[in-house]
Length: 102
Image 1: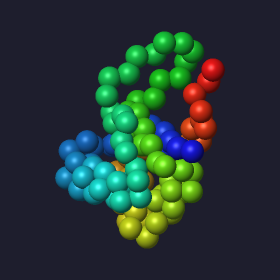
Image 2: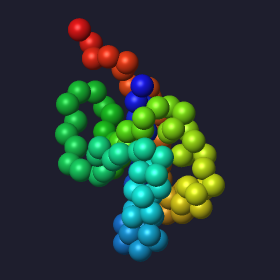
Image 3: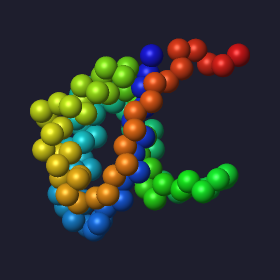
Image 4: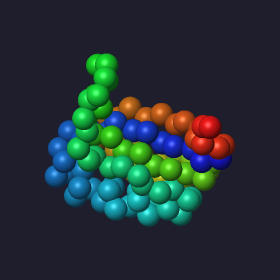
Protein backbone atom coordinates (compact mmCIF):
# COMPACT_ATOMS: atom_id res chain seq x y z
CA UNK A 1 0.00 0.00 0.00
CA UNK A 2 1.36 3.43 -0.94
CA UNK A 3 2.35 5.94 1.72
CA UNK A 4 2.65 9.70 1.42
CA UNK A 5 5.04 12.20 2.92
CA UNK A 6 3.31 15.56 3.34
CA UNK A 7 5.54 18.47 4.15
CA UNK A 8 5.05 22.18 4.65
CA UNK A 9 8.56 23.46 3.92
CA UNK A 10 9.29 27.19 4.01
CA UNK A 11 12.87 28.17 3.20
CA UNK A 12 14.27 31.15 5.13
CA UNK A 13 15.99 32.23 1.90
CA UNK A 14 14.85 30.49 -1.29
CA UNK A 15 18.01 31.40 -3.20
CA UNK A 16 20.23 29.83 -0.50
CA UNK A 17 17.92 26.79 -0.46
CA UNK A 18 18.28 26.37 -4.23
CA UNK A 19 22.04 26.98 -4.10
CA UNK A 20 22.48 24.25 -1.46
CA UNK A 21 21.68 21.55 -4.02
CA UNK A 22 18.92 20.17 -1.78
CA UNK A 23 16.15 20.43 -4.36
CA UNK A 24 17.93 18.30 -6.98
CA UNK A 25 19.58 15.85 -4.59
CA UNK A 26 16.45 14.93 -2.69
CA UNK A 27 14.44 14.20 -5.84
CA UNK A 28 17.11 11.67 -6.87
CA UNK A 29 17.37 10.14 -3.39
CA UNK A 30 13.60 9.77 -3.06
CA UNK A 31 13.43 8.14 -6.51
CA UNK A 32 16.11 5.64 -5.44
CA UNK A 33 13.68 4.44 -2.74
CA UNK A 34 10.64 4.45 -5.03
CA UNK A 35 9.54 7.98 -4.13
CA UNK A 36 7.65 10.09 -6.65
CA UNK A 37 6.94 13.78 -6.20
CA UNK A 38 3.25 14.62 -6.64
CA UNK A 39 3.37 18.26 -5.53
CA UNK A 40 6.17 20.67 -4.78
CA UNK A 41 5.40 24.25 -3.85
CA UNK A 42 2.63 24.89 -6.37
CA UNK A 43 -0.28 27.29 -6.04
CA UNK A 44 -2.56 26.45 -3.11
CA UNK A 45 -6.11 27.53 -2.45
CA UNK A 46 -7.68 27.38 1.00
CA UNK A 47 -11.08 25.76 0.61
CA UNK A 48 -12.18 25.30 4.21
CA UNK A 49 -10.99 25.90 7.76
CA UNK A 50 -7.92 27.81 8.88
CA UNK A 51 -5.14 25.46 7.71
CA UNK A 52 -3.01 26.85 4.89
CA UNK A 53 0.45 25.36 4.47
CA UNK A 54 2.88 27.86 3.06
CA UNK A 55 4.74 25.54 0.64
CA UNK A 56 3.35 22.01 0.30
CA UNK A 57 5.41 19.03 -0.84
CA UNK A 58 3.83 15.60 -1.39
CA UNK A 59 5.94 12.53 -2.13
CA UNK A 60 4.40 9.10 -2.80
CA UNK A 61 6.34 5.98 -1.76
CA UNK A 62 5.43 2.34 -2.46
CA UNK A 63 4.90 1.70 1.27
CA UNK A 64 5.30 3.25 4.71
CA UNK A 65 8.37 1.05 5.18
CA UNK A 66 9.95 2.55 2.03
CA UNK A 67 9.09 6.08 3.13
CA UNK A 68 10.53 5.58 6.62
CA UNK A 69 13.64 3.86 5.25
CA UNK A 70 14.29 6.81 2.94
CA UNK A 71 13.69 9.38 5.68
CA UNK A 72 16.04 7.55 8.09
CA UNK A 73 18.67 6.68 5.46
CA UNK A 74 22.32 7.65 5.72
CA UNK A 75 22.07 9.10 2.21
CA UNK A 76 19.28 11.51 3.18
CA UNK A 77 20.69 12.43 6.64
CA UNK A 78 23.01 15.25 5.47
CA UNK A 79 20.25 16.69 3.26
CA UNK A 80 17.75 16.54 6.13
CA UNK A 81 20.24 18.66 8.11
CA UNK A 82 20.51 21.13 5.20
CA UNK A 83 16.72 21.46 5.09
CA UNK A 84 16.46 21.86 8.85
CA UNK A 85 19.08 24.60 8.76
CA UNK A 86 17.65 26.49 5.78
CA UNK A 87 13.89 26.06 6.24
CA UNK A 88 11.04 25.68 8.69
CA UNK A 89 9.35 22.32 8.13
CA UNK A 90 6.33 20.39 9.29
CA UNK A 91 6.35 16.81 7.99
CA UNK A 92 3.95 13.91 8.41
CA UNK A 93 3.61 10.48 6.83
CA UNK A 94 0.27 8.85 6.05
CA UNK A 95 -0.70 5.47 4.63
CA UNK A 96 -2.66 5.43 1.41
CA UNK A 97 -5.75 3.33 0.82
CA UNK A 98 -5.55 -0.34 -0.07
CA UNK A 99 -8.41 0.20 -2.50
CA UNK A 100 -10.37 3.26 -3.59
CA UNK A 101 -13.54 3.91 -1.56
CA UNK A 102 -16.64 2.34 -3.07
